[in-house]
Amino acid sequence: MPFPLPKPVIVARFAGAHGVQGQVRLRSFTADPTAVLGYGALAAADGRRFSIKKLLGEVRGNLIVAVDGVADRTTAEQLNGIDLAVDRSQLPPAEEDEVYHADLIGLAAVTRDGVALGAVTAVQDFGAGPLIELSTGQLLPFTLAVVPEIDLANGQVIIELPDLVEGEERP
Image 1 (cartoon, rainbow, N blue to C red):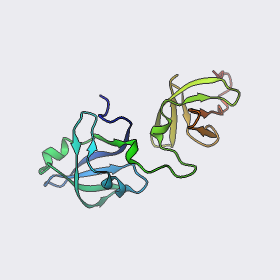
Image 2: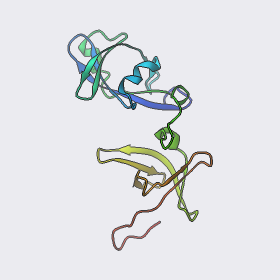
Image 3: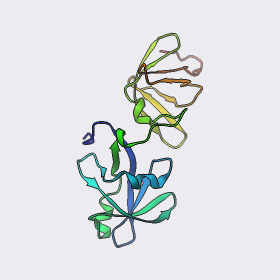
Image 4: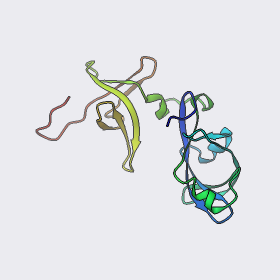
């Protein structure tokens, strides 16, 4: 189900209940974890909006928050795993040499020689560093060596295909 926003950017995820009075662990994906508290109501993919009433603390990289309308552990547990988004227009401009992952989605992926490799469909991170996912299903390391240039104005990323295991062919 798509988020009810024109250009959604996931900024946080509910990460479970904390305590018995409805407190919720919130994993923030913003550079400053507490910045997520300043965006107002956060949207879930199912259309619900969640307002953070108060920051209560931090535990193991998660913010502990009070959420409007959540007053008990059972309700807090039901929020676990829900991604929360804001519209891209609410975010500050990216710093120089930085880019929002959401801005990469849909960009054409091409080699320096102009060979089309597909389009960027996602940026994933399974714990060993970010990967750029292409419409062909390819996952490539999202590093300066593999993605040396991002050209938002022309809607493309330049890809330097890494050396492959002997016997494999490049697309």
